[in-house]
Image (cartoon, rainbow, N blue to C red; front, side, top):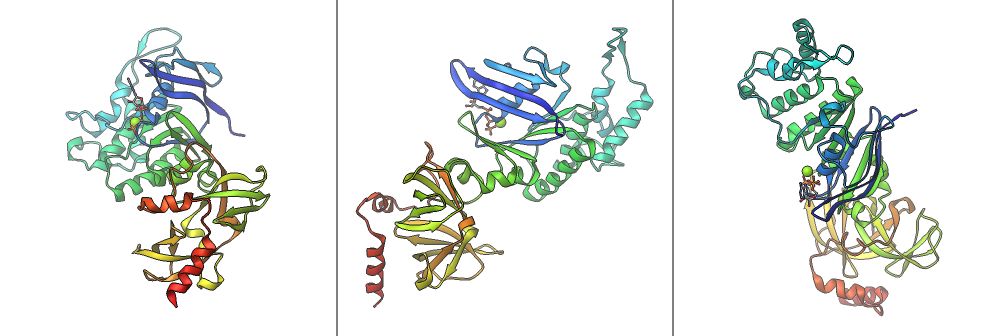
Length: 393
Ligand SMILES: Nc1ncnc2c1ncn2[C@@H]1O[C@H](COP(=O)(O)OP(=O)(O)OP(=O)(O)O)[C@@H](O)[C@H]1O
Ligand SMILES: [Mg+2]
């Protein structure tokens, strides 16, 4: 059974009357890898700072192990932080950088006297941490002689050597190049599992969030948009913002005609979604990889390929359906200008409630006049099909 470790209850944060976190409710389990994901300014760092004790929420409570800790200062929380701009001490070698926190005398809770850790224990714990972060043998090296990834690992070792229950990581891989980032993602996950520590991780990179996390918290505009496993967030996004932010999505206006039946472009599609009102307007998400290309005559929808980009594993093609442009990923080449049909299986369709994000995302068109065509209520896609066929003759 997972055990709850941290809880934010109705937390709101305002600076000079401006609300930057709006009623956040979130719990984090012991030994969980939880990621706060969202665009710049959505409130990720602020949330992390509240958990770390560097900021007190304007309203709401923070609990650790069931105890309210709003007024507990950072150094009295068993929480440690690795910031994006981690500062190693340039004049100390790798060993001393990691040992730094261990050398600070601590107050013994019983005798109330300041006590120092014995040198042998410091030695043992630093060497153990060097092993964990794969830097065995680096202890005498000057930190300035290390690569970016190695410095990052020293910063992580320094944060972990105090054996915190929780590690807060604010975009710790932001400064690294893509290849090193990917290696470090695997490394961090391994460290987290090996040490059984709760990680609360901040990133604006959705791929990174999906790859590393047990739980992803998607944020925007100071609000939590969705909490779930990486699979939940990808397969069952709650609204158009989440669908657009996590991976590529075609998001189309639809009408729910019945349980399991959604209408888009005046055509009915089988889907797995239920529980909407009859004829409720909805947002329909179709992922680029869930669209099958078939000969034009056999398609549920017919469109014209307007652009093709070779991506190695697949082609990204943009297809114009009645003036609305979709992204489709396919291994078969359909050249620009060709007419294609598409089929979508019921499990390739995901229906969402309308939200204030509706209409803002999920169209791969850059032509504004095409929006106007779609919004024309009298517009009949069948008629356009016939026109297109006439043109071909
Ligand atoms: N001390 C402060 N005083 C005033 N406004 C602040 C303060 N700290 C944060 N903010 C504002 O709160 C909002 C959220 O900031 P926050 O740093 O949490 O965003 P973020 O999601 O971490 O963004 P980024 O990805 O750019 O780091 C921003 O609009 C920011 O300007
Ligand atoms: Mg930030």
